[in-house]
Structure formats: C-alpha cells, structure tokens
Image 1 (cartoon, protein in one colour):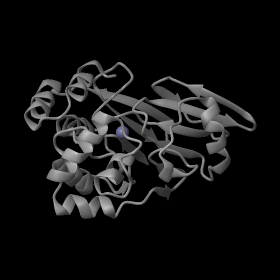
Image 2 (tube, rainbow, N blue to C red):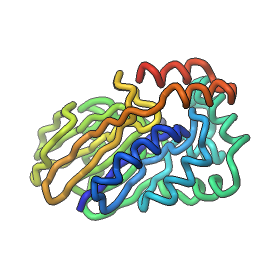
Image 3 (cartoon, rainbow, N blue to C red):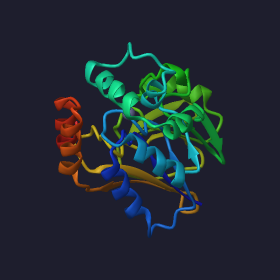
Image 4 (cartoon, rainbow, N blue to C red):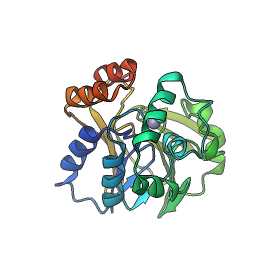
Length: 241
Ligand code: ZN
C-alpha cells in the first residue's frame, strides 16, 4: 500500500492543489489528512471541500476545532486568533458540518493518526524532541503514528527502551522500530523551506519520504492581503518560518 499524508493545510488552496497535482502520478492507495485544514489562510471552504473529496481518513486539528467553536481561543496567539475569527465569519455550513464530524484519532492498519499527540490529543500539545516523544510512545499501540501540528517534518523512533530522533527526509522503516512521524505542513511550513510539504509511506518498500512542492506563494499572499489577514501570517509563507 502507498499512503499519502497531508497536514496543516491552513486554508492555503494553492499549496494544496500543487500537492494534489504532484500526487497524480504517484499511484497512491489512500490519502490521509492529519488536520488543520483551516486557519491562517484565505481559502478555508475550498480546502475543506477538496480534502473531503480526496482524503479517506481525516482527523481534527486545533484550528479546525477552534473554527467550529469546539476549542477556545485562549491558547492561540493574536495572529492565529484573528485568522480564526475571520475563518468563522466566512466558513460555509458544509465546511462547518464536515469539520464537526472529524475524530481526534483514527487507527488504520499499523498506523495511528492524530493531529498533535497521543497523550491528551484534545489538549493540542507539541512533540518537538525525543523527550516529548517518550510519554507518547508508551501510549502507541501500532507500529507507527502519523502527526502534524508543529509544521516541521521530523521522525521520532523507539526500539526497546532506546529513543532517538531523525531529521532525514527519506527513511527506511525497520519492523523492530516504532515511529512517530511528523509529515510537515502543506500550507505553512516552518522548517525554513517555504515549499509545500507532504509525506508518502510505501508499506511494501518499507520507506517513508518527505516530498516538497513549489507553489504560487505570491498569489496566496495577495488573497490574504485582500482578506485583511495579519501581515505576519502573510510574510511567514515566503520565508517558511
Ligand atoms: Zn497547524
């Protein structure tokens, strides 16, 4: 099986369509979305519609949850909050009911899917380093867990009692190792590479690869300007931070 993983699209339609175009010839069996379809970007409705159409497995992200009023805005910074308030105003009822239907966690085959962490997924904590991953590995019941949330692609590994972190974009999956894999962000990368990011897992080849796709950043920035979204959010797309 070949799985595609997209996460943290954040209303960035240009980045999402660039990735869906890139996926066309890659013979995927399933497309998985790890949440945060909306928030920050100018096209929440169109992004929700596309994800709903293309991805079979989709979990709820913190921005999705905030956009439907399920998560309060107290832990959001000023820019994120302004963007969520804007999103709430323009979101249509189809997008609202679709986001309302999303679960926090899904288990398929040998994989657990969650936006933030296995431990209290509804608290939206971050997994930044090996230490953060230790508690989550204790709760992992499948070989792999796929996550998003930090917008930085990274692979946490555990074999017996040994834990370590890998920053490589291409890894071989060892059957004796457990993995928590962050697939990066489609619509707002923060690893200093502004190109849209997604992941592919090939279970037969036992490989996971991070893919990068250029898209029309200036076009999204122009839409954000017209929508009156915060300047900081517009600028960061260009630098990928
Ligand atoms: Zn996000």
